Amino acid sequence: MKKIYLAAVAGNFGMLSVGQFFGWTSPSLPILMQGKDETYPVRLTSEEASWVASLLMLGTMTGSISCAFTVNLIGRKHTMLFAAMPSIISWSMIIFATSSWELYISRFLAGISTGLAISATAIYIGEISPADIRGNLASMFTVVAKIGTTLEYVIGPFLSVRNLAFVSLAGPCLFLVTFIWLPESPYHLMRRNARQKAINSLVQLRGKNDVRKEADNIEQSIKADLTNNTGFRELLCVPGNRKALITLVCLVAFKQMSGCQAVEQYAELIFNQANNNLEGKYLTMILGAVQVICTIVCMFITDRSGRKLLLIISAIGSACSTAMVAIYFHLQHDLVDTSNLTWLPAIGVIVYVIMFSLGLSALPIVLTGELFPTNVKALGNTLTLISSSGFAFGVTKLYLVIADNIGIHVPFWIFTTCSLASALFTLVYVPETKGKTLEQIQEMLHGSSKQ
Image (cartoon, rainbow, N blue to C red):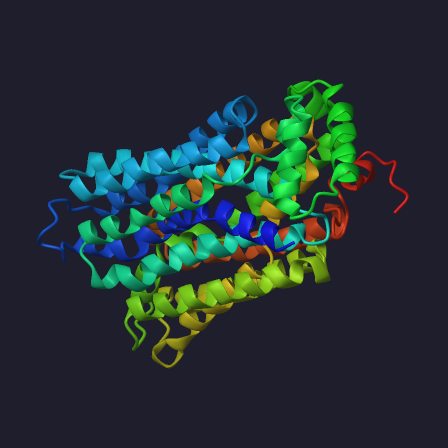
């Protein structure tokens, strides 16, 4: 069983660079907007900074669309390996950039890598994992990404923009070296009628030779799924598939509208505007450490507490914490003396990261790898990630615009409302997948499960 953990760690290393892409903006944008790095030739306005942050999400949409084709054509493993290429190019472009347009292109390429990596990794980890620990291994996906983000928070303020990108280049290189030795997903190999290769993959992943029963179950599941069509009609018109799509699209929409991208990519700017006695860069480091710890906690309790309960607790907690930030900036906007409340937005943001990390951060990704059957998994995951990226782009692009023109309190009140809506939606609609095999989940979604 140890081998499956090693495989999951290596498979999730690609998410380190994804996390770095999201974290890079927090220490770098203040430097680029204020011209603090005299050795770097690029300077950004607030409008240009919002594009640098948000183009990552447009690229993610493009990458996820590409993944829908490559993940079944060349496999899960090779799609994940291919995703490292635009990542390497992106970091290299930041190192040698001389204009804002080069940063735009680099961030778009980073998004393509992100879209490919998120979609393919979620599928791969979901398919190689045994049912009893699948939640743990899939949650590792988010832990590694948060570690990447925190690395940017911690080292970014002390390095030049060019040197930070150079250090970050190690992320995709590390992934290539560790992941290239792993086997392809047994589900994909069965899909390609390579039964013996699928058995060999299971032997390597499980660390034992007696895998015939699991291989037979996978083969039967694949055959049943592939007797169905794989297009939009199958995804939208089959009730179980439609429920899976609605569940995931709504969850990722609520996840993004809870404010995670605004907090993650503009953390240092938000803290600086709160007039706290502690510098924004140090609060951001604390924020990064907290989110890593909390996502690790989520990883270990996902298969014990279940997905649904954690999602509800996370959403309610996120709403309460963003309301704290909204109240402070609302009072500040109304010219109320807030000198005795400078601690409130810092505590609110940190509590938000704690509550968000306990459920909303990781569990939609876990469910993405669980809810769709094999025949529409690539298409379903693609539509889910496109939806997520679209909402993330909107939040990232509009946050600075709304904050600068109306007030910071307005987006945070919106985040609060969306988090409360997320809790209600989860309570009413989201199915529980704890402890179920992928086959049992499909039976439950299609109304034939007795459990």
